[in-house]
Amino acid sequence: MTEAADEAGSPASRHLIAVHGNFASSAWWDDLRATPPQGWTVHTPVLPGFAGTGHEGEVSIGGYAEWLTCYVAERELERPVLLGHSLGGAVVLETASRDPDTYAGLILAASAPLGGLVTPEENYPVLELLPSNASLLELSLGALFPSGRPANFSQLLGDAVRMAPDLYSGNARALAAWSVAPEALAGLPVLVMGGQLDLLITPEMVRAQGEALGVPVRLLAEFGHSFPQEAPGAFL
Image (cartoon, rainbow, N blue to C red; front, side, top):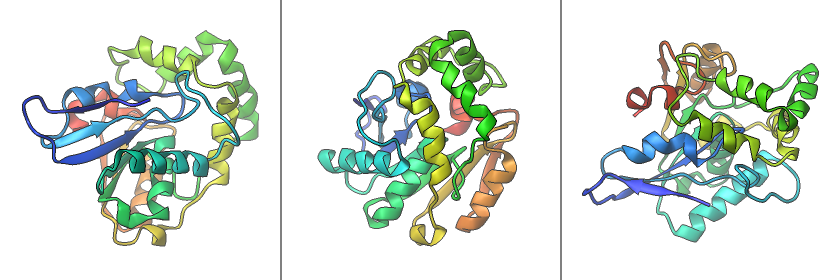
């Protein structure tokens, strides 16, 4: 399941693959698809198990990376740039680390840290409640947009509800078990971005990621974890 878009009337010569985060879908990139960077085609795949898609086997970042690798190969996309938000950041980091020469660069937007992201054990009962508690899920999702919910929030919420039940805790366990060595990405251009008001991937985490990769970071003031959706113009 995927969608692609380029700027109207302008032939696209390069490919940007935008990978969503946890509880998410391709709808999180609606603004990026509507106004893509000039000369680029934007691809917005839906990872398996998200937004009503099927999922089989173990829930792992490595499994998502294998799926993304196949996605790129099947479409014969020549050296695309990978953009990952939140959990999607871990997916693109893992994907690129396995074969960095296949990709032209990485954009990490509020990405999971290189050493993984550990969810406290006391939070897992709450995660298990989310599939059956729409109000709690809406509250949790809404907290990612401190400057205001986007116009398509109802669709984002609907897609979150349709995530496979085993992914609610499974994705948290997968992020806790995953890590990637910065050396595996040596030579690959990387842009690291974060939101100044992000309580999940804090500015300190973003700065540490930039330091580990040896690149400067860009923090968007007045926006939180979902700054690509809160401030699509500034993000672009």
